[in-house]
Amino acid sequence: MTKIKNRIFITSALKSGETVSLEDDKSHYVNNVIRCKIGDHISLFNDKFECIAEVVSNSKKICKLKLKECKENEIDSHNITLFFSPIKRSPMEFMVQKCTEIGITSFQPVLMERTNNKKINLERLRLISIEACEQSSRVNLPSFNNLISFSEMIKTMNYDKLIFCSLEKNTSAIDKINLSLNESIGIVIGPEGDFSPNEMTDLGSIKNSVPVTLGSNILKSETAGVVATSLVMNSIYND
Image (cartoon, rainbow, N blue to C red):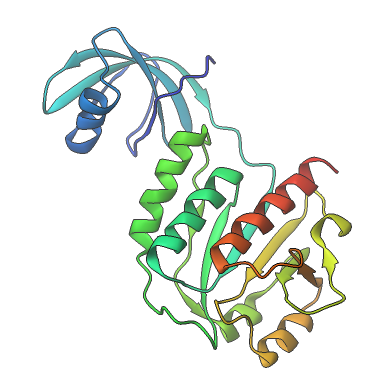
């Protein structure tokens, strides 16, 4: 299938030869943002298929597209969950956007001892993630789980590899850890004040857990999330 830059995620079914109608904000996007005309092509995708679609009718309120070529989505080869403490809205949205682009498959917010922001708008984060998938040519949207406590997270940990970012000395760099594509991997990022001593002990006691360093500089939580995700993805795809 030919790669098309302009992509839109929709929830309705997609089938070659059928016509799809876009309304409201999606129609506005086609008309006023990417300025498509009749005969132009864009890409539509849902959780199962991606299709090349031709604009056949375009008005202020409704845009109709004819589905030309459809391809079933390939399932992500990796399985990486990012566990993070909610932080301020803008940095958290930045982290979700970038980690979606890089390839995180699941986001799990966790209430930790030093968590400052206990409010999280999952629907807003999902929308940001969808936009990141549209921009990055990704077809599989990551999942978002409801906020849980740190103790709940510890009880449900079951990963082939669990890496948690630590400021402690004598920890390994991610590229020194043996990570493979067929493993389930969890990445745990602490809050702005870092993990508490008790949390560090609990994380270290989990089967297959490894403390890792992201370098000598102290990174903000959102930066740590993006850097750790990038390093893990690089490791499993360049093993």
